Length: 220
Ligand SMILES: Cc1ncc(COP(=O)(O)OP(=O)(O)O)c(N)n1
Ligand SMILES: Cc1nc(C(=O)O)sc1CCOP(=O)(O)O
Ligand SMILES: [Mg+2]
Image: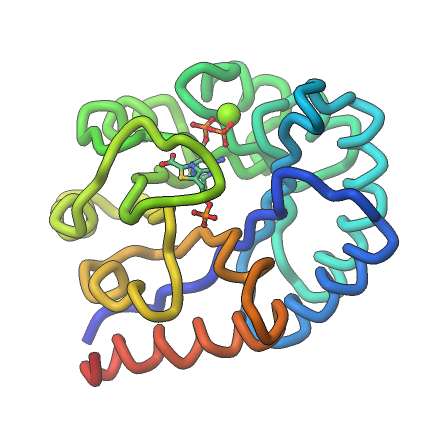
């Protein structure tokens, strides 16, 4: 039987109304087991998101994540992770290096690294001290223009070859997550499938839990 796979929730790239979003965030986290949250704010009407916006969102969301025992990571910026008191940071290949993020945040912080569909990048990230490696995109995604396409076989190989946790990302939904769970993904990183779910984020989280559990028990 595959080991447990858990949800890793990414915020939407834009949060227009932080007060309202806090309610949705609380309802998603209250609906099931979410291991980790990533605050991933990107451009708003073509304008780069300001540091103050990230810090304000972190200040509002971090206590909610803590109440629900979810680790809270900041995307891209080790400096803002440090300032906000987050548990860690997720860095991509064009962001600060894993080593720099670790030096800024210390040994206890969580540092995750984007590795696209590359065993080589993932092995380098592991050597550099990453706490997890992220592979993607597994499915077409509306959230960003993903530069690479990854296959479940990569997750299988990773789980066989190493003990470092893997995160699968990109267009993952309750309906398509089964092969990733069965391939040994430790975490499913999801955004649009939760925030744009027609019955709301709590229903989405419950649907993911059901689908993960069905995949573990071999029903899909
Ligand atoms: C868990 C996780 N995996 C991959 C990414 C993508 O990071 P990156 O390539 O730096 O792209 P942006 O998210 O910065 O657009 C991620 N954020 N989280
Ligand atoms: C942020 C991100 N990175 C990806 C990668 O392939 O590295 S795919 C992606 C988008 C994830 O959001 P959704 O669940 O809405 O598809
Ligand atoms: Mg990045």
